[in-house]
Structures are given as C-alpha cells and as structure tokens.
Image (cartoon, rainbow, N blue to C red; front, side, top):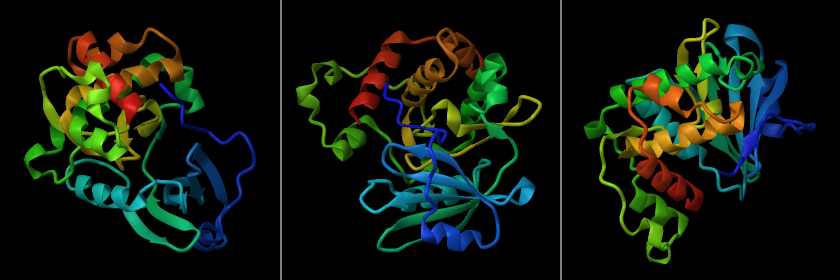
Length: 247
C-alpha cells in the first residue's frame, strides 16, 4: 500500500483563493497529499470550516467530491458543501466542520483499540444507510480499472474475481484518517468521499484493514472486522488490495 497523504511536516503556502475565503480568520493546513492537494482549516471551534485546494494538473476532482457529498448528505453525516469554485491555478471546495477528530489524531493513535472499533462501526453504518438503488455512482472493479487505464488482461490475478458477497455504496477511500471520532470514542462521520460509489463491500474493507497497519501498527484487522460484523475473508481482501494498488 502506498502512503499518499498525511499531516503537514513542512510549511505550506496558502493559495490566494484560500486566503481570500479566509478573510481575517486564521488558516491552518491540516492535510497534504502527494498530488499537491492541501486541506486547510479556517477559524477555530464549532464554527470552523475546511477548504480543500487542488492545484491545476493535480488530477484531483473536487467537483466529483462535491456532487457525492451532496448526495450522501441525504442519508448520512458528511461535510456540508458551502462553496466550490476554481480559477487558472486550481480548484477549491469549502465544507462545514463536523464534530470530532480524525482517527489518526494523536489522542487516537495513542488509543488504537478505540479508534479501530469506531472505524469498523462507522464503515458498517455507511454501508447500511446509503441506498444502492438510489446511488448514481459506481466504484466497480471494471470502472476503476478503465478509469486508471489498466488492462485487466495484463494482470492474471484479476482474471477470476471473487463473487460479490455484499453490494453496497462504498466510501472509496476508507483509510483511517477519513473517519472522524467523537471525544467519547464513538464514530462521528466520514470525510473525503470523492470516490464514493457502488461496489462489493470488500473493496472498502480490504483497504480499511490495510490502512490500520500504517496508522496503528500490525494486528488490528480482526478488531475492525468484528466491529463491522463480518468474518475475515483473505481471498477478497487480497483481490481488492491488488485492485487498489493498480488504480
């Protein structure tokens, strides 16, 4: 698994559109990724908002995330879209803050058992509440490979996909940082849903469990699966991790 994002470790320049959106509010970079995207927090406390910035050429689609957030908000707690726009330099997406902290905030990396349970519970809630029949988005293996320009014939391990055992609306990027947790350790909400779409639930579960090792160390898969309410499935896990690597 490739670690593609994380907390800022060096100074981050504030793009002019983000500074304009902030006005007199303090601007704090809270997340960066290798594609050049940055998430900023504007203000503090319950009134804080967040701005995602995607520089031109980054390949990040904030439009895709905005439309998915608006759809998912009818059924689950996700960031409310407040504004979106773009210019020659890049695009931005403004969302309202939500209660809780990321599952990789220091308090939760120090208490991985609580965080992992919350991630499992939250993923199950997402899968249970988002209606497959009403979802206009796909995250199927075929669509993902096509979007990534991957020829499945060139990868023999993809020739015999395991049967779908549970068709759900997947998060699409269920890595640990994208779960928010209340101060009492309970699940709060999900963020970063630009890939949300219908797929086998193991497309999410395989990556969610894989992400635990990078954020908390090895040995947490069983706890997440137990909190979700499913037995381990090594075959589906291996298959969907490979698809993740390729796409």
